[in-house]
Picture 1 (tube, protein in one colour):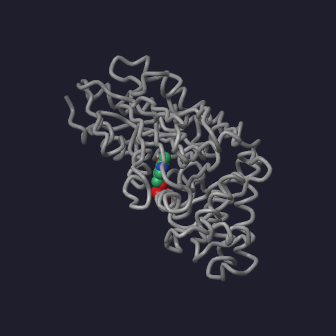
Picture 2 (cartoon, protein in one colour):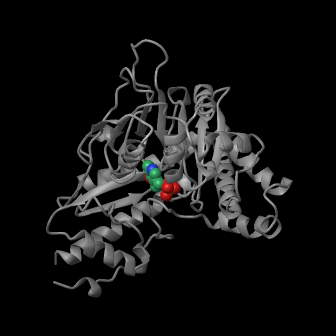
Picture 3 (cartoon, helix red, strand yellow):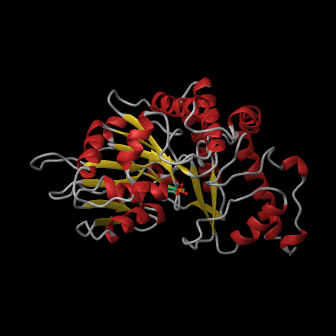
Length: 379
Ligand SMILES: *Cc1c(COP(=O)(O)O)cnc(C)c1O
């Protein structure tokens, strides 16, 4: 049996672009060309002046158009990525208690943030095993219900549907973490109060920003809590983010390169037909991966329930006799990158990011390469 370092993949099988990360993800060469061209005039200039504010305006209006923001919904943005948004939401959106659906690392991290806040009641958590879906209910006393549209650590996609509410008074706000799927799957934003994400996944940009589409009720909640006694650090203040976003600005200096890459990707998707086009590209790639795995004796989709399989992050378990670590090492030596499983999941697994920027033909090339490597590993 050859050792992994003796295995070669013929160049004719290799994908044109070998980047399949689940975030950060493939950046299109055209995005980088825009960065280089536009960056030459905009980077290094004040974010309080029209050129950078125009980029923020294009990002906000482009996102509203791409995702079909209902009237009255506003696009907010701020620095720090989705992780900072969890803290901002803990301070600025949860009145007294949140209920989280936890079915992986990312949905779990937001639950940990609200659970640790000394000014909130203990969070309610509905948990499920990795690879399955949990759904949180709206129960009396809970004023935020939170879940992830796409759980990137396991490749589970969730419905974006408000929990039913039979209680007295106003229903809880629905906060949806769409970090790794916003822009690559259809969504009805009337089912959400806050649909938030970061630009380094579907949008192929750099990290460091968060964006959140907020309903009128979410905006009213931000204002209500900001006017209360609660101490909120300014860099995590959603009221400050709201005021600045309305001026097409951010509280403090943003990464302008990230904005340029983000705007280019939004406009690329819109120019090709919008959300349905982007979603069908990712769907084509992920469907291929799941069908391919089902036809192999040594591979299978990790997520058993087909309707819960992510269209953008495909997780594929390998049989014990095929070491994912070895497959990943051979692929990496041939320029096929970042198909490792989420580190804390600890499974013998491949995880493939198939965001809209990934060519479906490259995904077909990827599976041919994996077949080639496994055939040699199994001797
Ligand atoms: C990547 C990811 C995050 C974290 O995003 P950062 O911008 O790195 O903080 C949060 N939630 C989900 C679902 C993710 O995929």
